[in-house]
Image 1 (cartoon, rainbow, N blue to C red):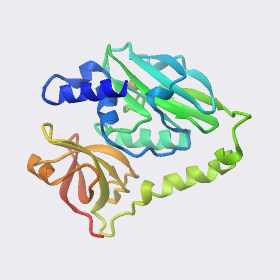
Image 2: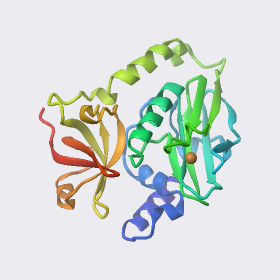
Image 3: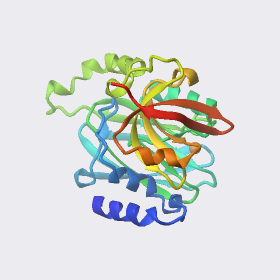
Length: 271
Ligand SMILES: [Cu+2]
């Protein structure tokens, strides 16, 4: 599964074939980059080799998921096969209500913002994609389509992760509330907001020179009032991408213009 995806991603690099047509592209590229897994309140990225269960989900233009109620056991690694039976783009994003609410509000503000996180998959009309997630924390979570207007139209489902009685107390469900709080206020990975109001800090996650795009795991973007997350930005000059490599810590000036999010003035982060 993993090697296959890497080969697939490599095969796609030289082509201009719309990778979205393959449905799995999003996933394939992700698998190919050595990105550290990040524990979220609702779980952590799963590995294909650990998948114990496959759940098929269908999304459609009536803004519904089928099924929209899912129950899993804590520690279960689930492969979601997500089909888009509609005629418009949909996505499945797993999260908790607070996080999804925040993201949904941002998507209304920046409709063309492209996220890239292991707990989400975007599926073009008529295609299918997959997402592997390890539900290692018990609790009640949600999944949703955050494309502007869809969440607001009720495109949301529930995931109940039933605590595994045998699991050790180290799962610390009691810390849940504090975790959510910390997550919303502090950028992940210890990234701090740029001291200069309009410069943001980020780590380079993916470079797509052909399309003049760069995926950045960024800290808070104060000038856009955007919390820390991983997003795809465009650059005006592809040459700046030659200076970058995955893992670089940078500073940049984020700008929202027209329907684009731009990363301008990219420079190395000062230590
Ligand atoms: Cu949708």
